[in-house]
Image (cartoon, rainbow, N blue to C red; front, side):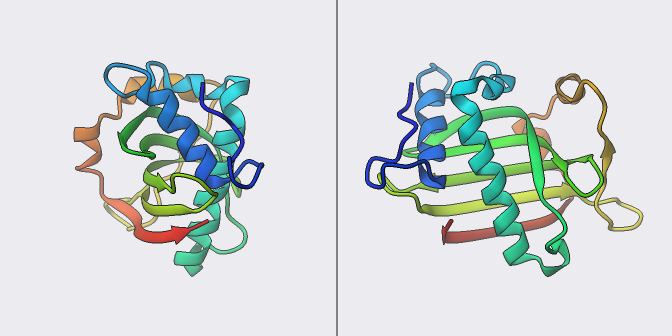
Length: 173
């Protein structure tokens, strides 16, 4: 299991969260956690919370219309995998706090070898309604993981999603 504390700062950080999931996913032959809903196990929850905070803070910085009133919670991931040294990719859905609906999310993140900084981040957020251009929001129900498994978000399918927001940034967090 990955060390949950940042080696240089002695505390949890965005970078430590990425390195945690990188180490966990890299332990499997296909470099992907076998059960993404396993991120809710106590040993992973702290890292998920940090990534939710990172997405919220970065979206607010890049997109003024996101505003101070919105944040994300409850990642419901279809997959999380390692894609390079200290680099992960994840995709699925998350809860929008403002109205408790679900939105699509896909992120690629790379952490420094040590320290709390995220060296690079690319994020696609929210599917665009083909008729209105607005963010598609799905009702949150009692079994969101079932909905994700039913939809079967695979990497190939993600390429065809018309995303509402997309950004790429360096040295965030």
